[in-house]
Amino acid sequence: MPVIMTYQLLKMLHVAAVVAWLGGSLFVSLFLLSSQPQDSDEAPKERKMLGALRRWTLCVTTPAMVLTWLVGLHLAVTFGWFAMTWIWVKVAFALALSALLGIQSAALRRMANGSAKRPPLVDLYAPFTVIASAVIVTLVVVKPF
Image 1 (tube, rainbow, N blue to C red):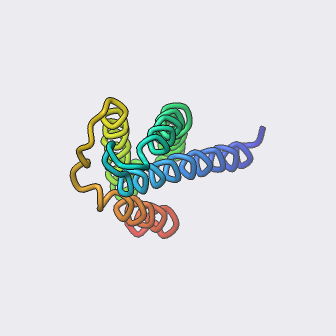
Image 2: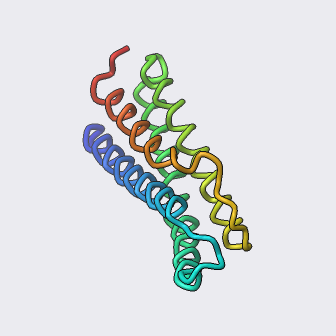
């Protein structure tokens, strides 16, 4: 297979994994933001949604994050991007988004175990995801440094 075709396929796989990862992360952000205390009238519906969201996060969002990292690192090493500054800034934002998914997963687990406590800074999860994603896309497209 020609190198250019392999690059395009890997880039496509990377972008698809990013979309699944960040879409799942945004959905978790919005769920955590809108969740009600366990004693509310909405509790049975919310528990059902919580179970489905935890399964989705474990089976789709987290593997998509791992695939994003694997393909992204492979591309960066193969094409020598680690010699450029923009990739390190991108990696820093991607690490922050990965940490956020870990925080969100822990919050979902605690909620499933009966905790009604809101996660810290939950109001900032979705905006941070959108802003960090925009910064990453800008870095990849413009490669400013």
